[in-house]
Image 1 (cartoon, rainbow, N blue to C red):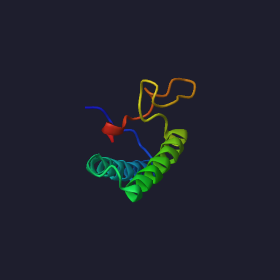
Image 2 (cartoon, rainbow, N blue to C red):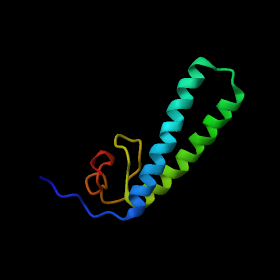
Image 3 (cartoon, rainbow, N blue to C red):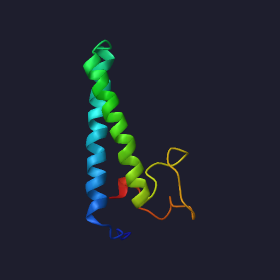
Image 4 (cartoon, rainbow, N blue to C red):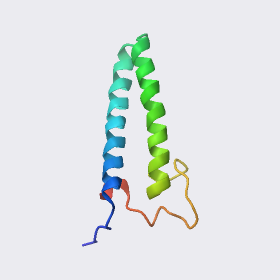
Length: 89
């Protein structure tokens, strides 16, 4: 049994907020698949995509990378093995 690292409450708050934005983006994507001409939905999608980009950048600056394989940057030393993976929290 592995022990969970002690993380600040802001880790969980930021991760939960990011997951909420991801949920909105999935729902908007599904909607836009059937309503491709809905300009309001496209604008909302782009707004949340922009918001997500900033949220990910802030999260990774504080806590390390969220995704491997070139989707996230890493500081030195290699951070991927040092931080808990999102599915471990």
